[in-house]
Amino acid sequence: MISAIDLEQLAEIELQKEEEEEEQQQRHGNRPNRPPAPHKVPCCLDPGHLYYDVARHGILQVTGDDNFGRKLVIFSSCLMPPSHQLDHQRLLEYLKYTLDQYVESDYTVVYFHHGLRSSNKPSLRWLRDAYREFDRKYKKNLKALYVVHPTNFIRIIWNIFKPLISHKFGKKVTYVNYLVELREDLNFDQLLIPPDVLRHDERLQAAQKGGPHPPTKTPPPRPPLPTQQFGVSLQYIREKNCGLQIPPVMSQTVSYLKNKGLRTEGIFRRSARVQLIKDVQKLYNQGKPVVFDLYGDVHVPAVILKTFLRELPEPLVTFTLYDHILEIVRVESSLRVMTCKHIVERLPEPSFIVLKYLLCFLHMVSQQSLINKMSPSNLACVFGVNLAWPRQGSVSLTALTPINIFTEILIEHYHAVFSSRCPPAQELP
Image (cartoon, rainbow, N blue to C red):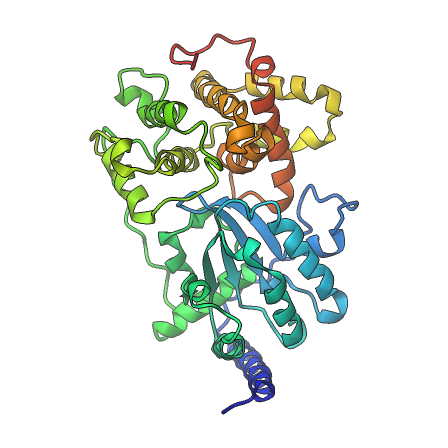
């Protein structure tokens, strides 16, 4: 039987071998002829941040939700500096500090393995300590772990850790050989994928096809159905529904949750069965009736509501106002409610009406927080990234704070923020 020490040596040898193979590929011109993109310090990162020394590298990002309403956490090995420039104990503390904000909800982790080298990898002892420190609190609501571009090093490490890893946890791990495989479960276009990982994926695909090939043209998207609800604009839904101001999927989910979900602990924090969500989306898109009582799970309409918001071509708070939202952290606390009011009043009428309808409901949910445990702050963590995101890429970890502050103010101070413009006809009582 191979000992743990032997496996550690094999892992180190395998990692060095992978580095040599990559260097050889680059020498032979297999790497796409593009200069590496310079690494930038994430915007809005305050040098006074408790873990600025670690966070500034961008190794860890929280980028909204996956396609099933679960918070999405990304770890990029290629952004880890050499070990002498990074305190790995601080990295572990930062991981726990970040996850502590989300582990009460279901969440997903994407691990980009490419870029882990002998020079920047943490010790196996550190990995063991890290796994032990991530106790049940962190593992319980982790619903999926995607290991992207796995290598033999990963296989050896898995053998080392096998005695520690439960069968239940092992079933959550999915190996992803090519980035395209992530499209099924994740909002791929909003993923924060480091340029080095993108280039590595191109090399792997070129090697699989026997050499460099021009990119395959994707077929044009099919035109949406007249009854389409997901993935189309508010304007499209309004035009196809005789000028209806609130999209049917929103009015139906909100109505159901108002009657049967307000007292559900952790409402909006749980996910639902993946296929079930897809089936409900299909029914809505085909204009067929959806009877939530048949599913026996109040979290189904909750996930459907979040999914609808997340799949809008433009966020409800619009791309134009995104930078204004990020500036909220620079505003004095006493002026923030009025600032949020001014931001919201700049919305086009259709977006304002739908946002007001949604926030009226979320305010109602927050008023039952002693029972459902969903305070304005907790609701903001869930809904913030579904209301605002940048035109390019995804929400960075450093942008989450201003987005959550903005959303929390909208929920907690709903009446003050939305007092100046006429309410929609369907506003909740």
